Length: 168
Ligand SMILES: [Zn+2]
Image 1 (cartoon, protein in one colour):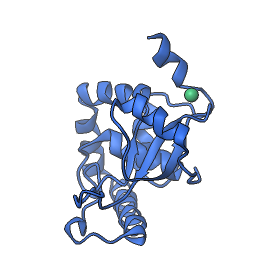
Image 2 (spheres, rainbow, N blue to C red):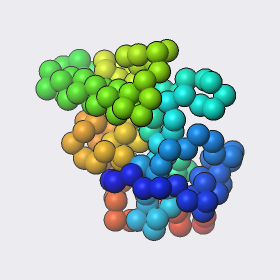
Image 3 (tube, helix red, strand yellow):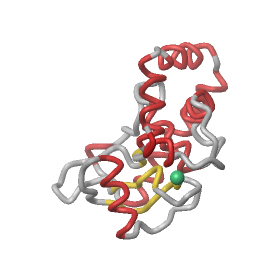
């Protein structure tokens, strides 16, 4: 999905999604079909001075919850095993890692974050939220593990995820 400017309404929507005020926002990297933010792009170094590796952060509670359930069910170990056995997947995952670093460095290289991307890339599967956020931001075919996780939870880019959250 293309990056879009974070409006005041987006900042408030994300504050409601995450339960905390938003800081150091660069842009919205993916949106629900209804327009609500799904993924926020955050500055690699926060205004506080702290390095922040998670360039793409998942904000939507429905996706966060679904991925947490998947993690709780042991799906990360399944993906780790697949990664170990599939050289092609390994190569794609490494490329996703390199793309992530290149994009973040283009905004601002942070010496403490050199070689550190997110979610366990390039060889581990440690956070499906970070990997799915990258996959949503870049579109299908960039982060293979994020793509698999989104498929596993039945993510449908044409369906609004917001209503389920409100009614649950
Ligand atoms: Zn929605």
